[in-house]
Length: 444
Image (cartoon, rainbow, N blue to C red; front, side, top):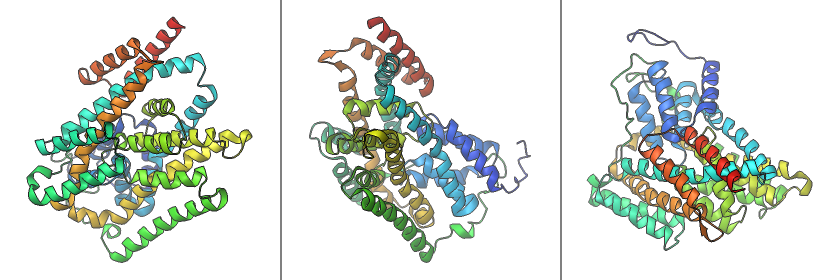
């Protein structure tokens, strides 16, 4: 599209938006930063569906919410353009391709994971994942830890989860309390920001421009807020009650529904932040999968498009398959059901936050007393992510009580590629997978 800068684009039909969101769902590699950059390039710079400032306005709001911010940004823009149906369409198409791909990969993993070629690929990818997690901690930390106060919160969070083994929700609540107090006593230390790195004034007139009035459907009213919120709660509650009635409240599917709803409300700072909580619940409490399987799941999640939080689909698949919830002859069906249940309850809150709370919460995003608790949580998240890298390293670099020098070498090379040469995640994982295959066959 090469419209003159002073010409406003024509209104976008829903079918055109459908094909764009579907395409994005298949190419959205690179984590939230890469996904946001993709949307910025296409929607702000090339198609000019939304202006730079309106895009940043939406991004800042999504960064304040729990949940995958890139998914919520897609929902927000879809909602702004095509009302509720547009938001639902954008959100679903953003993660459905990833869900389908992960179901297939999870099936291959559970059915054929012991084959030498599969084991070799995972042997190379897992050390790379440690490097990817460290890079995520650095990326989030460089954006979040703007002063010594926030750095101290991050360090305290690291020791709280790594040494004291405090539960993740308690760390989130403690950080929120510190932020609430800090917002009153030291407001300058708890400012939040979400600027896009390529922030230019304008790329030309946009369909939704800076001076475009807020659409009627995006204006706040209490009846609309109540209607959408109650509708979302009724949907989530209805599905959970159906699972509890059919398979028992203590059954795996009902437990997954409740657990992943809680997990969705803990995802301040992205998927890496909630992984320790998913680990504590999925591995230690419910024992849906083992610690090595959890690491393998993260490795698979890094290789697929869509939000990284889609690792919950792997956890649900493996948990339902391993427990044969539909019987020994229907483990594949059980796995698919587990993946879908985990995904549904993880993403439902994101839709509710945007469709119900967008008009209300946007008005308060520049109020430091409102944002300070979330800023403190984001700082704590950095410490939690570093502890996650430490946890993965302990399981990846030590095998059968012996230090695995080859795994350490792969991880070190991956760190150099990420930090020094800014290598893309997919190319890096592919290279490490090849290295894993070569090493595993050489030692085999």
